[in-house]
Image (cartoon, rainbow, N blue to C red):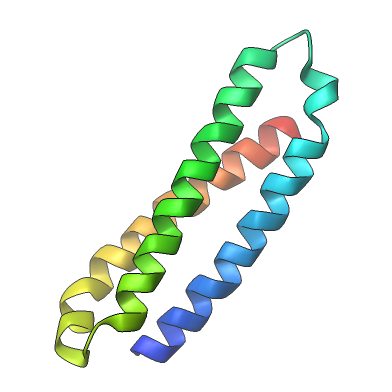
Amino acid sequence: MNREQTVQMMKKQLDQWNHDIDALAAKADEYQDKGSQQFHETLKSLRIKQENAREQLERVSKANDAAFEDMRDGVEEGLKKVAESFKQAVDRYH
């Protein structure tokens, strides 16, 4: 995947995660009593991971071709791990 494809994929993924976080946050009232603490910690963790991914996107967007090549594998692997965290949270609370 080249840099432009990676940037577009990251933007699309960030948009999806934003939607997922909003959907989970809308359910916060359901978790007011039972499991509330864990739910809110999970939501906070997802927001932090999303922000970290957004920062990676900025670095990838600004990187020259040589730097991007050095970053690519780490970025793709990091996104896979974050995606799995989001999937687990959505499956658990959705």
